[in-house]
Image (cartoon, rainbow, N blue to C red; front, side, top):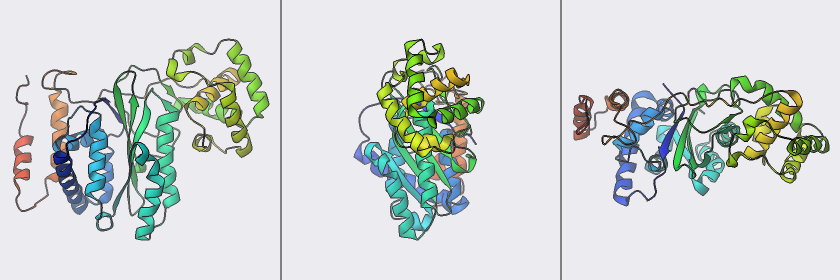
Length: 365
């Protein structure tokens, strides 16, 4: 099992209504089969696997290499499972754009309708997953989609996506709650994507000293911190922070002052509490890391957590030739999800059996 993130090119346009209607039906049927055979927690485990998720999108008929696969598949599952949540013990909240900001309310509404507890913990998990990938792991992608999947037992998974308009790519992040022991120290079980963009990684294991020093800065008297900060800006910030590019510019003192007043009043107990405060975003995280490095010598981590590239490739060689071994692995994963489904001996099962026997794709070499 792998969890992590996937890079996808930004594609415009919308999913045709005729296709989305079918995606809702087939997607819901696949999820129901998995729940029936293995339980709702198994759905979370598979959704948190970027390879399986991508294979699901392919089976549902969406472009394998489009950024829209993420939002469309999550939307199809949410719509397709609507009204079946109680029977399945599986719930979906969030979505794209403004809908993503309604995730906490949707989580609480689902739980209240079913008479279930645990809303505060699940809302916290949703909020922290978004905070980490948007602010603590600064890789140049701004989140615009957040889908939160959870079970009646309180297990959860997140599929969210960020956008980088400068390079024309999107990046998808996967979380599995059962694998998260610390939201701010290596919270991803694995990361997959395309490296190349400078990264400020405040959730790296080796960044613990920087996190502690950043917390100490946030709990200092704001006037003292601002004097130090302005002195640093008047000199020369550490070159590693300068290499992060224009989108990673350090914040203005006025913005930092407002945030420091809030952090000083709250005195957060740990870095996770600091990161979770309203108003503590990427700029504040960078400024605190800068101050922590200069004042305490606690350098932040710039290790990109990307470990390998994700994508199957394309039959026409774009962005690169098909990786047949990876493609077969995705097919096998999906086939395993459906192998015990017996819905009237449907043609879909026969087609999947034939598909799993293919070793190459038509037109590939």
